[in-house]
Length: 476
Image (tube, rainbow, N blue to C red):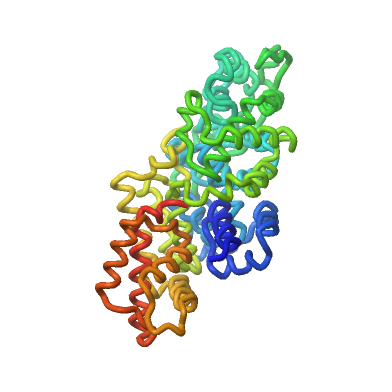
């Protein structure tokens, strides 16, 4: 594999959910620079139209169940032609964690994900403003119970602690003053909506639709002192002050490095541990301010950096990455089907139920994705998909393996075949002990030859499936 092809494959794994060999071919023709720009400027999101999906999912309009809503998003990850849009939505979903379990209204969480698609690559200020008006977030963190004279601090606290600045960069009084500024940011006709929610049924009409409402009469117009700034602040003013803080720039920079470059320590430990690459974080902080808080500009700097190009296989795939990436590779879901519903549940078995994070902290990532139960699910899912030659993507992959081998050679070495398969699967070079075990196993089955195409195909599929069960396959 050429250096350019390896680098572009790495970029497409990190900025999306992997790519087919045909997609990598096109990207290589365009070059790395053009591919980066295409990733960061995706244009209109391309995916199967919703009216087509509705033929297979009768609850498409309201998406009233959490499971079917998660399956719908997974289908977007698999079928989209603009995977960066879905990847950035997944990134923000993990930070601004909002769950179906409390809301009991999956459509509202999907609407929030759609907001991440629309604002996730732009100015951070705009994203925080939209988040503060988002009905799912308002219910999730109880801001509809945040009233003038009787504040609820949940949203104000998490806005500072988990969404922007991180622990240790604000005071308890700042939380109270921020909460005062967000009084009146609520849902339209909230009492009636609460009554409806307690009495409605999912079938046949789905859940009620929530919408943001600014209740001027319930807003605290008094003077507030927040992060050493004093004024008659409203929520917009608080967001502007937050986004101009260096601690915010550093917090977001570290999140971007953690998700797109290499695994960091879990977020709760960030107040006590230095970043893995302090120089990279410092550079991203500078770009945050130079670009007027633009997320795309920060990602562009990441994708062109040496620390990114040298970071292959330094992150553990999250369940959504392993499921969506494997399904994109196998090509087993070419159109909406019942299989996407079961696949959506599989991410939950692996520890990441989309649209339903375990708490406001989201998921702890990195090596915490790997435990004995989750690893069994990951291995079984990947090896089953990749070990099925009836899947069109696997059939194409096997053909690629055969084409890439030296057809003039009557025999093919096990070592050569393993290297070819790991390259095409986008897997890290296998460890010495695993590779030697695999070589011994393949050699015990006799020589690989071109003389019996059917046998060669079956042995290649077996090899691909075996590689998908190795620890190296868990990395991206």
